[in-house]
Length: 457
Image 1 (tube, rainbow, N blue to C red):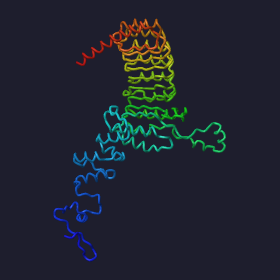
Image 2: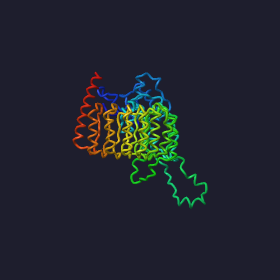
Image 3: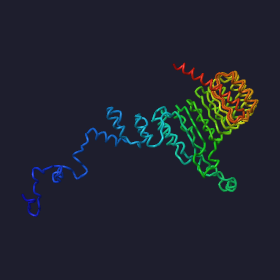
Image 4: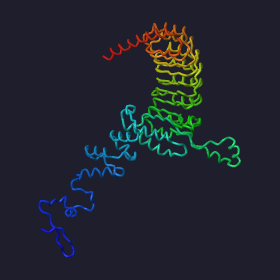
């Protein structure tokens, strides 16, 4: 049989033998069946159901269809949805945890849902809102996006940990420049001042009705060679706006404001917004500039709240401030942990606190290390150790207690059956006293372990 036939001026290929007639390998027949798209293959034809689901996924942003689907198809759509969909579309419609897990792991390399109630959706919204606030620049960033996000995520926000707050970018005018420009600019100079010193939390406080924990730092992380003290400043305007927000946050249980140069005047304003709140139990004002007047305001809070944890570490509290807190402790029945490390309460303040502990029956842990204490405080503390049965941990490290003070503490510990920790590092109490005190502590710890085992069984 000839290989081809000639019809007029056109050469026509000869037909293939029957044993070689394979439709898939014959380009002549394939061109008659398949369109001009060479990527199309007859071997892969998606079912109509898959094509419909694919269409739903591609058009989800403009036409979200989810609840109307059967459960098996709904799961397929959720697995295929991109994580870049707008929050107004996904916030209220999607509750599938696996989708929010994909959103979180794609955005943040480290995600621990144990700190977020084991909820991926809560983790996403809390960290997303946190990032928006941390990158807000007054007078440059539009606060509308933050307000919209807070409103969308109000059912999922329980805790906010704001690690930095940017100040305005505008550079403050120098005083000599202001004097030169007064005659030229007149009242226009006031228009150059920023409207906000930092982000105003009261703008979104109404949307955070379920917020239980708030951690704030008025400073900038990683400023490097651009360091300036103005980057770490908690202004009067910031204080008034924060106090306004705290009044709105009725469900707040934990408030932490540290490393923000908070002084006495500002802490008194904040304390007024936290009075008479049964739900508020934890206050952390560590690493600030609070002295005696601020400590007296904190003492007032102890008498008008159900506070359980108070942290005033690394401030400027002196004897009179410690006495104010001690007076509050004599009437308080809720505080369990008190941290006054790195202050200047001295023996006068230390003795006042120890005398208060002879009446207080709720405090379980106290830290008064690095407070310029000496033997007189140890004398009163020894009496507390022999009488108080609620204390479990006492830290008086980095104080000059001395050998005689160590002997008195040992005498008090011999009658104590409940103390589990007594930190005596760098106190010069002597090796012998420290050894025997540790022996008593180990005995108390073993007794507590046996008791706990009996209760559990």
